[in-house]
Image (cartoon, rainbow, N blue to C red; front, side, top):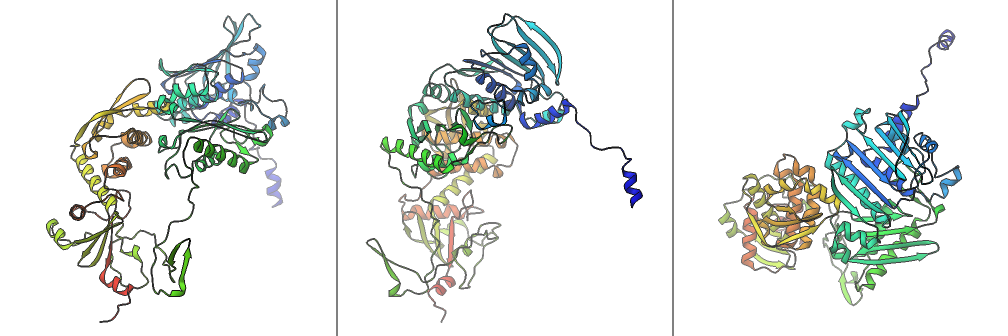
Length: 620
């Protein structure tokens, strides 16, 4: 044993000190995730430099070229040489400064990381000097250092990002996807700094052009007049905490969260606490699953937030989260109420469980307000696990869900379509929602909305499979304003949408026009419906582009759901018994009639034996 230890002492050391280039490449893996990361770091430096004009030129989604030009303070020759070294910054001087950061950058890592993974040219000049400096750097090595005649400010050009890190370059997404990330970042900073003029071009074409102005000017320029007109001012202040900005009326809500813009001390952030407080402020005025359009700005004491959580500075921690939540919620609620809207507290209680009555006793009656209700002595527990096949169960312990055929439904032995209609006797409709019918097995319950949605879904799916989608030209085509990043995404798939029955065209700057829709969806659509369709397009771009089985496309189910909510027979719609019979007949003619496209039950069957046992009729 001792000899072995002694021998190990003469072994060659395995621990080595990494060289500077390798260190910077590793650091770049954290700071520089994609071309948008480069744009973010450079634009933040331009803002910190006091620029009033910032131009961003992109080629091939940033893979070929990223160029950022500003008219800020610029750098001296000595400063620019320091700036490309790691942990060199003008923003802080000591550790205590981390608790009072009032600039966007401060870590001193970004520029060193960028020059280590790209071919970089930096041209910069301060106003007081006659000549500026130009550095040419490749993979961290300075190839050229010269004086140059140039205007004040800084111009940084990066070619062939990740040219020396092929693994990272390999994992970059498509040109349009990378450009979308860049566009969304510039959108955020154009909102955060409306007094700065931003210009973004891609392959020579203007994507964003936001002149100096105020916040509402930028909202109009980037998001269009419809959203700008729907804006309500918010403002609230309490003990050094301030919230201001604009929110929009509930009717402008979207299916996705990416219209919720929140800023803290001029820094765009994504924070669950802030998002939750915004949604809570809207109360019940926005349906579940939809999100408002908001542009909210918080000014907080510097020592009460921590932006030094991650190298990308995406995360921010608050020391007084509860206080911030209350401030935001109150400001939004007050603004909505001032506009005449009634805001109610959001319901947080769980949904009512199905009730099974075993015994009813007089003493179990109780009063709630002016109403007398009967308190059941036994409330059954709902089993929400999916059932593999259709079953008829006679045990008293079973509950209604045991009669739901959810998945892998064995095809029921049902007679032909005409015979089905004769064997099912519609006896009523409960709450203009549930069709009640008598069948040989017992009681048949059908959700009229879910049933109609399933029928329309199957019709549309069959048309897609047969490459025969019937199209209806809209009597009034609908125009939709998109923000620039959305426009770039949807533009990529416009031609693909024809096979799904949608005729969509580019119409003006960041604007689409929907001219035709599948005929199964009727003849007209509202702006709200068109807006939801565009959101679905945007969220399922990769799915739409892939050659997938139509039945596997979530996109199809979501589109049908949007129209079903507005075009199918809905809960509360009054239909005749004849219409109910026709609906049930069409539903049962399907191969799998038991669930809607998203898996919600369409039919519940309570067999005769089960009903008898509920009433304790277990005798002959």
